[in-house]
Amino acid sequence: MVDDTWSSALHRLWQAASRAEEVSALADDVYAPLLATPGVHLVVGTRWEDPQILRYMRALRAGSDSPVITETSRSVPRAAVREPGDEPVVTRIPVSGLDDAGWPEAELLRRTPGATFLVCTFRLDHRGWASLGVGVDASADVAAVEGRLAQAVDVIVACHTGIIQRGREARRGADDALLAEASLQMDSSLDVEETLRRVARIAVPAVADGALVHLLRSEGPEFVSATHVAVRQQRALEEIGRENPWLAALLARRSEDEDTVFLSGPELDGSPFADTGEAADADGDGDGARPGAAGGDRHSTVISISTLRARGRVIGSITFVYQRPEVRLPSSAFLRSLATRAALSIDNALLYELRRHAVLSLQEHLLPSQLPVTDQWDLSASYEVGDPMLDVGGDFYDAVPRPDGSIALLIGDVCGRGAEAAALTGLARHTLRTLLEQGTDPGTALSRLNRALRQERASRFLTAVVATLAPQADGTALLTTCSAGHPSPLVLRSDGTVSEVLTGGLLLGVLDDVSYESHEERIGPDDTVVLFTDGLTESREAGGAFFESILPVRLAALRGFDAAHIAESLTQQAKAYRASGQDDIALLVARWTGVPPGADLLPHPLQLVKAAR
Image (cartoon, rainbow, N blue to C red; front, side, top):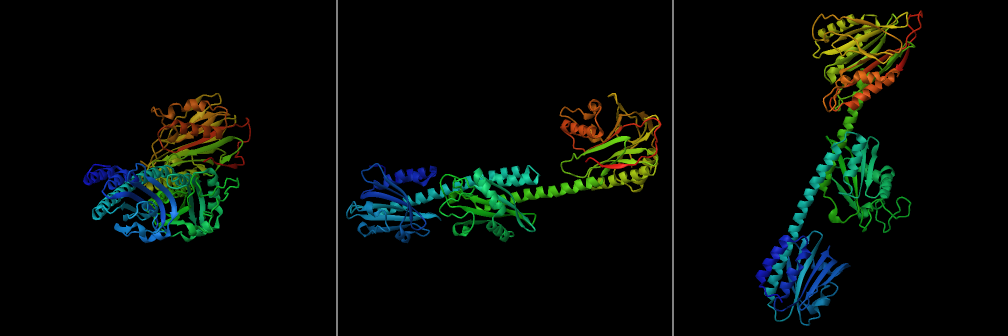
């Protein structure tokens, strides 16, 4: 027997309720004080799911320390009439009048003849209701007992409400953390396929057991990604995403709907997610796996479909597959937020991909698609985009055959990036090419380009270098170089030595009436001329050193290789070397193969080979 007064017991009950993580933890603090009330010989509580499914019953009789606990899923059809409304209801019923078909407590109460059952029914949440009752004899103060029942129920309801609220807050915190992590994961890549894979993976298994992502195309939904907690079910899920007509038709109908929809039970009839009573063998390996099944306890499959909408347009949908209890399903608000973040990440990746293709296409049009080749020289070029944001760069190069049988090599760099730099790049390259094709000497060509830039009031300056290779009767070539503030070309001699071509000259587009002087020197067979932009030399390692400091050594190590290998190798070495710097790298490499002494030096028939990009 408990000696405490009811008020003390009620105080302890409130204290326990403030700490409880489950309502069932209050049982001892509820049952014992009620059973200590004079005239009470039995306390019994029930928990119901929907109107008539008994889930739990707990009873404690006077003189016993061990409660009788029954956990079940028994249907009690007549119990539906007992379901309370929003407010608790206390009822007084003679035990002899209890019907077993509606009162599972009756069997326990009949052990005390002449008893009366005082029971308070109350609602805990939308999924069901509960009751707390006592069996009393004639000595009980019925009104006092009813009051205590009502007070105990108040504590139970408050405890349950607090648990739900704390659970919601914890769930909200977990959801917020998951959404933040999802944003970081999805936004960390601008690759379309990788972003789509991350969208599917980020929510499994934290949110759902499986996920399908579709993009909306003009011809309908296009499957792009799927994931599942189980590998075998993932294969089945991928097949459903690609080929299932039920899902394709459903997604097509919902393409413009913004609200997340949940489907279960009869709504999934005819679908690959339908609960048939037996698990379908999704992959034919005899394990009985369904796409919705995640292993462990079986639960009815539920799917949700959320529209992926970004920047005012629908880009696709994300379908989640659940094989878990209802209480573990995410809220519609959470799924909408996740879908919004996923849609923006996917759309950013799609827009980036479009921009990348557009920029690369424009960049290609600013560079020659082919380089001229004869048996006298070996030409190759390399271009590496350094800007991760993919603005069009200002680097350019070209190789121009000339009427006298020589070839002109040109390379330049416009200050800055973007559309204005691209326009100036096109003007500079095509102006120089036209002049050099007509036989204009390098110095005059640069002066005329400078005049054109000043007349156009160009807001940017540029650097450039022009080098002509003219075959000589002794098998050498005359290298004539003229520079406008550009990095000096290098010559790799056949013996492995590297020298810098002497150059000078002012930047283009800065002053009027500028003249440029040329420098001449001879190169022999297998000597190689290397022209480049400052993106190569200014690649900087973590310690601060520039690639320029080791460029002669790296170039010397490439003695004996053809022009294509030299151009690509230097580009990749500089790219691997730099820890900072985002400038584009352009290289133009010409290896002089030589001509036999006394050979015909008239212009040779030209071939064109595709330029490296």
